[in-house]
Image (cartoon, rainbow over all chains, first blue to last red; front, side, top):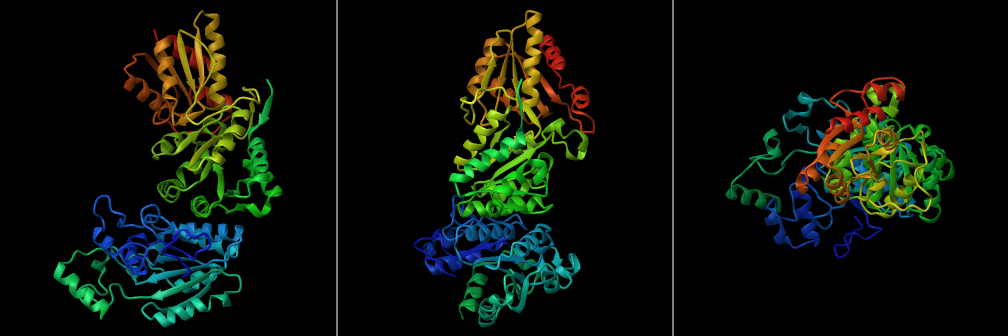
Length: 224
Length: 310
């Protein structure tokens, strides 16, 4: 992404709407390592008065482009940003990340139609398809069926890749121009909490509590 | 009294603003003809977005547009502006501190033949619960035009409750309006009528005329702005007259009546108090005249409420 930690609201920056706002902490770690704010801030997550709340807040955290958390709303906002950029003559890209569980929300599909109808080709959305939602698997709670076919039917250019393969994801972003005027959906096949055996692939990993010792083990795995 | 179509004023004012402000954009959810937005769309097609029948997405898109500096006016019927996109307006627009102007048309009984499904009696109460939101209900074409201009130059979310049918002109073109500033349209020492919106302001003026023939001098205040509320005027008029009647074209709870009652009780002023408005009922079809009688919103109902306050 074309972003500048020294000028987080730079007018012609690429933007990211993390519609699954509960994943804020993962984004905060990335923003801190990019220099948007001191790494020390990460220890203030959810502490009263923090600038790093559980869910993304554009007014509290440098580098957060949109406030999210009430699921299903982010893609509409990303459409508005992409449309506004076009009106402003700015060719930057707008990225959005939605969850597969979040895809139950009907507003996503209103936004899907809107983006295709308005040919928002600079809009690149990802679905974090980890096959789990809070109460169970997406298949047993609310079966999404063939997600890729659905987005294609809504007029999007669809690619599906391994969401743990950085080179594959990078290549997919590079191919969005093949969409020829269509907004892009890149479905990321992922495993929730991948790499940390205590949580990997488990329903409970959505918001599980674990000990400081386990946390250190998880960090070691992720940094290994 | 001269009447002008409110939706035409809406479109014309935005067209004029758009000439010098390239950030003005409009959205509507398949009601562009009904709400008057179509005239703007003809003048500025590249700045007009019909999102189809999808109010939630409309407000979300408006929030995104405003985050990159656009000034979106998004219109739909007040029933849907309040109910179908409440969470989007609450979170994506207001909680995110963005700059969305949401326009809800056909307030209260003016939804007439569309009936109970389309009759917003609840929007004022819903909107009042959103922190920092500015809530306006202009009573005439002049105040509507002026308040649209104020809304466009103000950074922050606004809910504009707008009748789209013709309304009587109550103010000279030179009149100026502020958020949180009511207009005393008629002075009186025996009672005060706090009214919101074209229908209720006009009924209140008629009620005050009737009462005057009986020797009861009733003041009439056009509240203009529900939030912020003009507490100073409310308390001063309540203290001066000792008899208060609130008049709103919607539920008589959670909206104007509640806001006025809170202001008066907190001030320490004691006054008789009655509410004109819908009393815990749903809407239904009919002419505006039928519905005014059905929900006891007429001048004669207002006059009776004043008389009931000894």
